Image 1 (tube, rainbow, N blue to C red):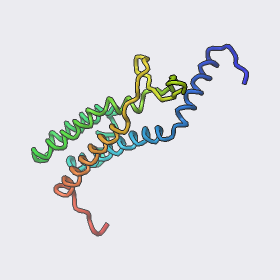
Image 2 (tube, rainbow, N blue to C red; image 1 turned 180 degrees about the horizontal axis):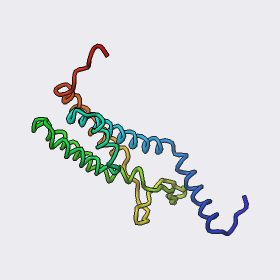
Image 3 (cartoon, helix red, strand yellow; image 1 turned 120 degrees about the horizontal axis):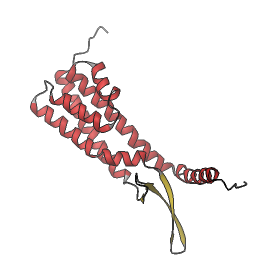
Image 4 (cartoon, rainbow, N blue to C red; image 1 turned 90 degrees about the vertical axis):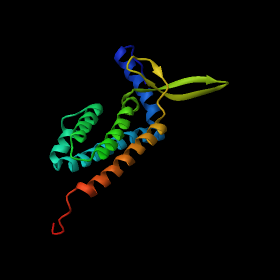
Length: 180
């Protein structure tokens, strides 16, 4: 391949090689994918809980997925709606505490999902070590977040929210019409 001394071509070549090294680390991509899937699942559970609280699926969907694009906004809107709901105080408290746990994980989630990744090369003895690193918003190169730890934490939030949903739906949800 002929290299042209043009900054656009040089950047393209560099980006492509960095991209190639990252995209060939399938376990890393799978872990990042699990993060996005688990957070999307949380959004659906939030919609389901709000549907029970509001008795209105369209409104629940709009609050979580329609007008609040940032995760913190979605969780704050969710907590506001739950706080004003007819649920008993202990039920509201449990759901809001779980939402707060999710909110505390947002910065790490955003770092995992949105930080550009590059390959770092270092010499360890006589071996060259390659490892992915993240680029911060300020442009500094840093270690990647511990994705496995984050996955375990968000999974616990999902399980807790699902347990709350099952309980609240059984207690307050509309019974299924057997003729439909």
